[in-house]
Image (cartoon, rainbow, N blue to C red):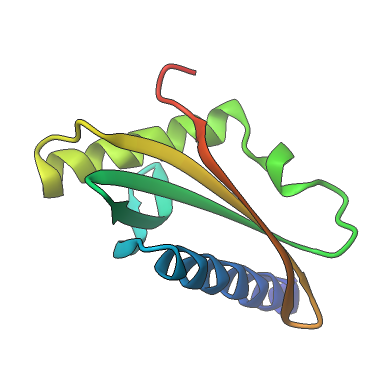
Length: 126
């Protein structure tokens, strides 16, 4: 089980780094990574043109049992939204232009095969 967790974390790290690289190439500034509070975590917090993007990264190996998009459950959204609210309260004081994005990364043999990026994948009212 411990070896599975190490491999899973390694795969997740590859997906998160690929997403950071994608965001930087597209003009985003990375504000924070792996922001964790009790009950939630945000993988990447980035800004561009006055908008803050709270980015959830779902990394999967090729041919997974569950697609990354399916892993963004209502409970997961709730945890992300709560963590984002804490970040806003503690770091920013306010966030007029915030959104929740999702990156789904496919990895095979420790290399990124595909990255799908969903802008405004969900909002805090859902």
